[in-house]
Length: 136
Image 1 (cartoon, one colour):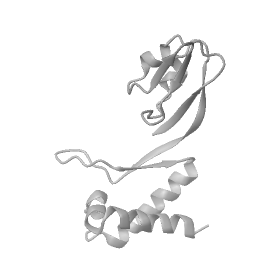
Image 2 (image 1 turned 30 degrees about the horizontal axis):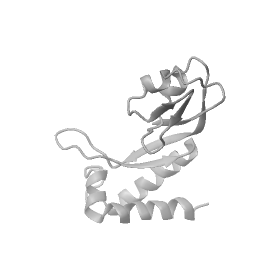
Image 3 (image 1 turned 135 degrees about the horizontal axis):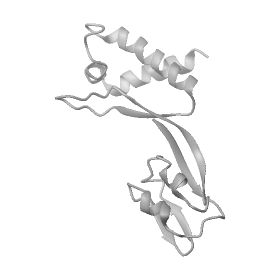
């Protein structure tokens, strides 16, 4: 999922349009300026597009990748990882598949989330991280 975290620039006049479109209420209007709350912001970028005065810039962009999630009868939330570019995502997928293959009791039949849960999410992600940064 692409993310774009906003920052306010000098064009902001505090009209509040950005706050109106923010679904997580991560924008405060004080006087003639809007302020993003990065503790709440999910990086959807809607406030950037909605500003009629071009008063918001992209402070930081990238991608949010969720690993090990599942929908259906049993819903499991994936672990979110923030990555900066497509090459990092491809590298992550490659390493996740290597670690999955190492631990899956029934490869191609056992779900990734089940493998992560069985061996421990922390251990799984640590091995992925070691592979990602050891093969430079």
